[in-house]
Amino acid sequence: MDLNQFLYDIRAVAPRTWAISDHGADVFYYVSGENSGLFIDVGFGFGDLPATARGLDDKPLRLVLTHGHPDHACGAWQFPRAMVGRADVGLTRHYCSAQARKGMAADSRRTDPQFAQLLELGFDDRRWAAAPLPRLTPVDPGFTFDLGGRLLEVIALPGHTPGSIGLLDRANRLLFSGDALHSGQIWLQLPESSSLAEYLAMLLGLQPLRPAFDWLLWGHTQDPAPAALMDDLIAGVQDVLAGRRVGEPHAWFGGEGLLIDFGSCSLLYAA
Image (cartoon, rainbow, N blue to C red; front, top):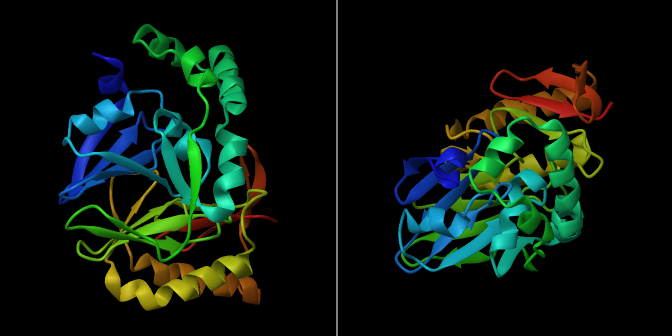
């Protein structure tokens, strides 16, 4: 087994659309049209990402990041350019710079027993840690990726991070939503996350586009989530803001927050 086979489980989830599990740590996507292919996020970037795409088709490659966290954006080092939401450019540099990756590699050598297996399979952590980030190009809502017979529109989804974006594929009725909107545990407890009121404003602003998509393709499972969960999420956040409900204290690996379950999804927010 080579490193890519070990790291990446690839599943077709829609026409010319593949969900790629990054060794269980995150999920990113490769989509293609008649003229070009587009990575939507790239995970940690331990494997050979261009080779992964070449195993699916032979289109010229582009990259867009839904947000700047390392489990979605560190693999950008393998590309000449990455497009990212304007408000997340600095966040991407903070979390995914060569200096940040150097620290992650050192921590993993000390604490992650699976890291040795990556090294045995050919992962060069020193090269990974030393490679500079590519040029980060800000992308704003309304920008459209034209892949040739397939259009993906950039949608603002601030909340998890200030510059989180989604990609709307109207033809296939899909919204690639990163970590901003999904059926798992949505994180708003981070220092860079929006307030609950700001997050609700984003959700309400997204409602006019709701008839354009049925499924959410998001950053931590290969299973699409029904877009109808937006109704539960909006009602739940409104209840929390009105004082009708409150989350339970919850500890996570980076701190504490309040966790509340809305049925089709849950939310971890700052106390």
